[in-house]
Length: 197
Ligand code: GDP
Image (cartoon, rainbow, N blue to C red; front, side):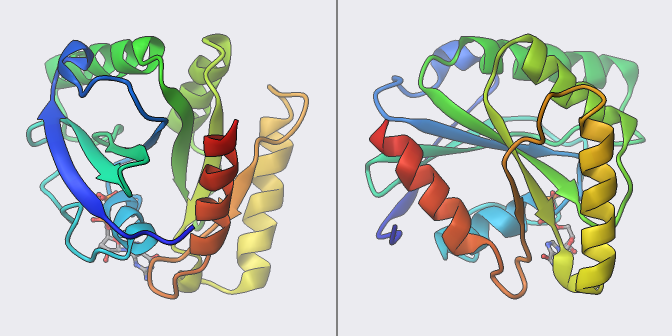
């Protein structure tokens, strides 16, 4: 798929106010600083579409972008920011989980994970919650340019072993780098195929 147009549509805190669910939708989420904004800008080819390095814990919004007037890309606020208050965490939880459970046009949730770190409890718990709610997701491992391929592979294997404690098989996953554009074609092809369903 070639991205012709990527246009910001709306920011919301309430899923009920999001754009009418008339096109397939793909949401991107992960721990704050995982590289989500950089990845969104990389796959859309629009370097300033999503704002990178926003102060974590700032206004938490569900951001809709229309891609090629064919599908929605949704930038969701990150989780796991250490300095977030209990109240902020609860707000995030309610807003995001309501959105994920009720958004009828959601085809896939991309869970971003930093390829340099071992499996983190917060990511595992989030994916478990997605599974319990029968929500389709895929994993995107980010920042693979920051270490050797061997090291990335070792961590991916470790992840797969941990995932298999919970799941019968490893979810679809992508290795990416926003710096080298690794994974861009694979992710867009995956979305293209789901759009045909
Ligand atoms: P977000 O908070 O998840 O949206 O993360 P950002 O996209 O703002 O990225 C956080 C930091 O990681 C920034 O300093 C980025 O430049 C850096 N970063 C993000 N993706 C990559 C990547 O693929 N490779 C490298 N080397 N740095 C990255």
